[in-house]
Image 1: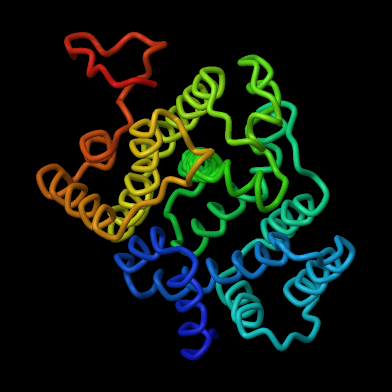
Image 2 (image 1 turned 30 degrees about the vertical axis):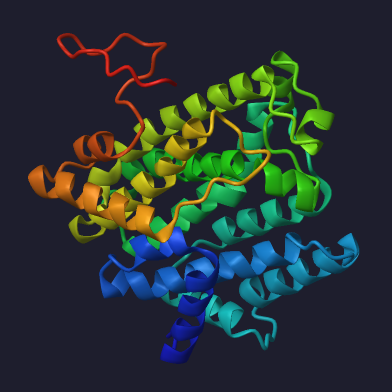
Amino acid sequence: MVDADSVRTAKAVQQRTGRTFHLATRLLPERIRRPTYVLYAFFRVADEVVDRTDDTPASVRRERLEQIRSAVLDDASTDDPVIAAFRSLCADGDVDDEEVAVFLDAMESDVDRARYDTFADLREYMRGSAVAVGNMMMTVMDVPDPEAARPHAAALAEAFQLTNFLRDVREDVRDYGRVYLPQETLAEHGVTEADLADANVTEGFRDAMADELSRAERLYREGVAGIRYLPADCRFAVLLSATLYAEHHRLIRDRDYDVLTATPELSRGRRLRVLARTWWHWWRRPDPEAAFYAASPVPEWSSDTDPPVGVPDPGHPV
């Protein structure tokens, strides 16, 4: 059983490091909200081991990740309240050890790997860094038909992760020396590592970003189609997460794809406006897909497919 002090500690971690996700988490029912705080805090603890801007040696970071792995999967002792709370949550909630292991594998790969040749390579990484997270959230939510929901949850988790990658290109290159944009996409558009390091926003870079935004939006479409499989009292919170993350795409396009000179961030006012807009469309028609397309900048179809018969082209760039 996760005690109340541990939940408060985990909640504080989310409030400090994940303001966008925290807003959506607050709208979950309490039985889901409390374990979600613990899940998110654990993910951040592991992520912060990897994402260090000091000179901590790679060997030290790998050792710390191994300590976390042993504490969670082998019941080794720990004095970290977040790790202890996550371990209790796993025991109480039947969180699959394999998902935890795959997540930690992805964190460990971040210590040594900083480039991905193809999207297939990046997707293999996201199996641990994103899809495993979505699978653990499904367990916590006790989804009635997990097999039906699973592919959609995976797509939505990947969409969130890709949005983060596209928003954080500047930070990843400058602070961590990482490039999550696939090398094949950069090469196709003539973008060099020097362009990224020097914050040189070329037409090729804009085209590369447009391609990757389009890829992410295809995943959003697949992902939100599965919200209907979630428990009814969880659907709006997940829908809001999707509209909040997708709102970054509006910011990126408003900046003409310039994510190199500054990182696009949602202000508190903008997050609240997205909440109000999403709630309005949900209240009018409590259908996750309809509300998402009405409230987000993601079009219901992409420009490389034919729109549904009888529906006008929305004119959204993708």
